[in-house]
Length: 182
Image (cartoon, rainbow, N blue to C red; front, top):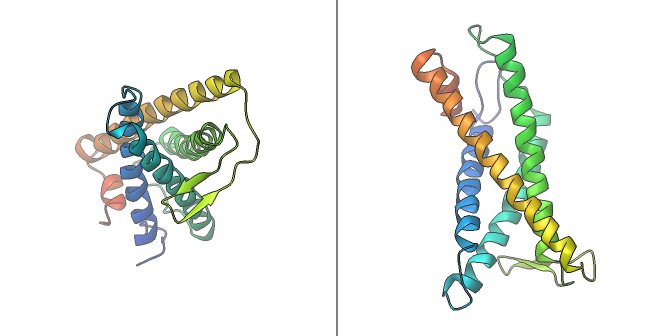
């Protein structure tokens, strides 16, 4: 079952969810680690390249996921879900989409701040939209990039705890539906 139905998520939605979860976790960890590197560290030049490429991939998958969401139905909330839970889940999902987009755009602006494009796994380069940004703007965008990533990380942790609450306390199928079960 590739597409969603009224009861369950399809394989495409489930795959995009978990691939992006792994990518975002890795990007957050790499971003934290990169801030501690000095110039002589062997990862100083290579880790940012990986971070940028996987960041671009994540933004691309975000667009794929959003289009896929528009072309599919959402499984109906479980009968055991309270209205406020359903509304909160929808708000957090929209916040995820917005945060991932803003983090990606800010990362792109930081990476292209000197007028040079950003490589996508050495397959092609995404050109800069500006010749250069002043240092103060880059610092401000960099702070936004970091803070937005922290907000996303907090929401991801809350999202995971909510899924575990549904599974272990409520004993409903919320988590199983995103794992491919019914």
